[in-house]
Image (cartoon, rainbow, N blue to C red; front, side):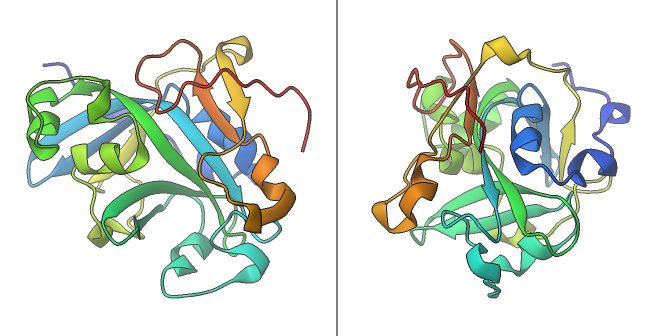
Length: 215
């Protein structure tokens, strides 16, 4: 079982950039690793979504909204923002930009590379398949990420770290509207801020939507 070396951990400067859309693209191909009570799991990030407060109605921190849940988004880039969706599903996000900007990237899907048996067990499944980690709630459970890890810093002493796995070329990335946007978010529902690696079987919903414009 091979484990990526920790000296490849992404530096703080990666997360402190102010362009959350670019950060969402750049996280593709990176490796997320967890060490939960000595159990190590890893996966390559294959799908992400960008959320930009305060002008993004799809973002929890729209219009500078500050609540006990969203306060983590206002931390400096390089923290984990973990919240519970529908009262049951943990969702793993990476806070980006400067302190107070409330930008975050949702990790939507990963390709497991280490700790397959652990992930299968955590997901109460029989064997490894894309259904283990092809969705944000699924991958968080597979990696052992819980709400208690909200606001942890993604450094070498954290139970969650992200390692550099190289860059994915632009022509190998699809982009399109984010998943689950409802009409109450208005035009923000159409922002093409979901990114995934083309032809990757671990993507949550491999819709062939590619948007080449600029928001």
